[in-house]
Amino acid sequence: MFKGVIPAIITPFTPDDRVDCEGLVENLQFLSDAGVSAVVPCGTTGESATLSTAEHGKVIDCVIKHADVPVIAGTGSNNTSEAIALTKHAEDAGADAALLITPYYNKPNREGLLRHFTMIAESVEIPIILYNVPGRTQLNMTPDVVSELAKIDNIVGIKEASGDLQQVSWIIERTRDMDFTVLSGDDVLTLPIMSLGGAGIISVAANLVPETVVKMVQAFESGDMKTALEMHYDLSPLVRALFLETNPVPVKLAMELCGFPSGHLRLPLYRGTSATEDALRDALSRLGVL
Image (tube, rainbow, N blue to C red; front, side, top):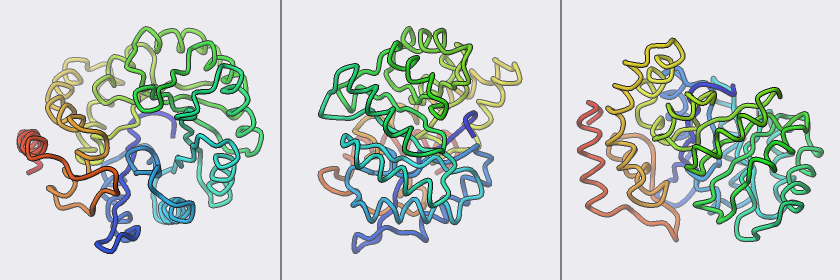
């Protein structure tokens, strides 16, 4: 569950702006057939910031009910009490683990971060994966904080999306004797992070081309670096296109182009530009998806 390819799945919406559970199920089947290790609903890619509490629970319930792979539920918040409530709901619903982002906007200090995640971990028994993405939160969770939190029994890993390979190396160095896993949070850095000792990727690109991402990771794990690098560079145009605008703007557009259940984005996010669409079409065509 905590290695390999783990898609951070989109949340499809119906034309009248309801969560499209049938669409979720269709997308889940596509991903499980491709051999992914687990899925993450209600992360950044799932537009968690614009889901109501009831919708958040509905998405997690739907995914847990229908997924054929383990479910790592996104349950983070910048409100500790809310994060606890969301994580408890995920545990009660049967989630296999929870993914918790650093508290955005508040920008707590070191002690605040430690207390936030400690309180959440103590409120549940399921495994917890930390999520560091300073580009979205304006707060970087440093290696000393991560290694301190890694001492807590049910804090078992981190999705590292700082883009700083030196920081990733320091985290792995500090936690290598613990039962703790580092996962890439950036598709472009999957192989570099795995070469440092990371275990896989929580991926945006895998929503579209899961088999390709799985094969790349498996090639690396089997020692076939030549194949892994070839696939990395084959995927690179798509990965670049997926981050031309704020995630998940491009990936939802790409899902729509490929005929997957997607639906609109919720404001303040809005449909990608024509330049983004052109880049996505080109990248998807190169991969034989369009």
